[in-house]
Image 1: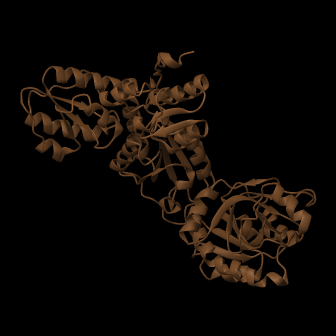
Image 2 (image 1 turned 180 degrees about the vertical axis):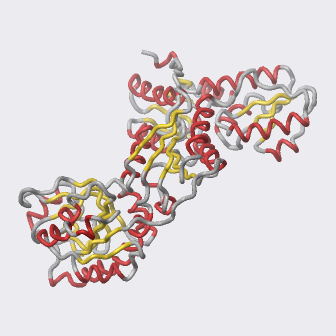
Image 3 (image 1 turned 60 degrees about the vertical axis):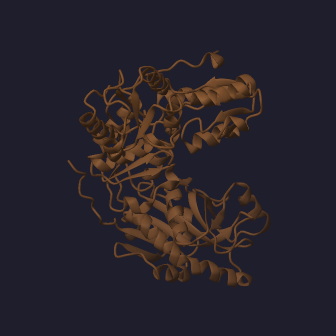
Length: 514
């Protein structure tokens, strides 16, 4: 069954422009036929009146765009601030609107950068009058990036719909004065590009449902590897050296780096005697020998399922087999396994390799598999190998790990009911890339992102149901951020689809047990 036909229509939306000059600039580039630029008037009173108009209240999505004052000293005229939240300035009168959170800000900011704009994301604060001097410094101290006179009151009361707020910095002193007319022209000149980016945002505000594929995110091997580094830091203090990335995820590596882990490509870069962790992907005997030569205090965080493949490689080699390792060239896992018997192992990456690979003795051939390979790819490759080598010996148990299989199964099931699939994971994560391929085989467009900020709004234009999964090395918090971002596009229903329950746990290496 293929994915349902995507509805390409954009929900009706209104783009509020407080000043006439702002409205005129925004109309030069949009919005399209489903949107309206509405001149709402400057200041709180006019904004509150405009917010109550039927055309605003009945819109499918609501955005505010215009110029504003920059509160951060690094902002320059023409820079764009996409609000992550909008709030009223202290002392702006009661009752004042609560903080309005805008979870789709990172995606909108990315769309505006594609328009060639310099963009920051952060809070925008609305004041009742022009802000100067010490009052402006007090607002800057709250963390707000920009100040305006309208956004908080235009957006108040509309939290049930997709919202956006974009302000182009006109000055970094008072809000707008005669002396800043040149800077105002610079800011107004950016508004047509802002309107074009908001068009992309509005086209994606058709999202209504999110389906979470389960299981997803960390597997037992990844949790174990990360915990090994954390425990090593606790027991020995920083620095702790890690050969290669402990797992293939930029967020995990960055977090551990901040805590004192140092990641290197080769043990030769590590000072003699230093505490050293081998990554979850495993290492070759040559690496272990080099570490011993340097008298490194090694802790092996290799996933036990990868260790199993190493053991099988040694056993097959001891029986004089030619070993066909099905996997991807250059991946740390395959490099480590090949190192167990480099003269006996041949790498087979695809069906073409399977058709052409040569062996020493057709009666003594076995195969092993990279643990993160796609199940469908393996089936096709093994079929070709068996046709060429009828005596081909399989590993005693599946090499593709349980987590890879389970996540692929869940994605395959979820993708069939979705208009688009978002997979959270880093670009060098093999198992995450395989999830994208699985979704595409199910007939659903699928995209790999490192986090919510990596979602291209154009992928979601007209989509109503979006599936979400994550590779085994991606932190669960990143999935939460993606779901939050999709809620900012209109998703109100989040449902979990569970293919299988996981309860696997691995024991820590003795060096870090407590």
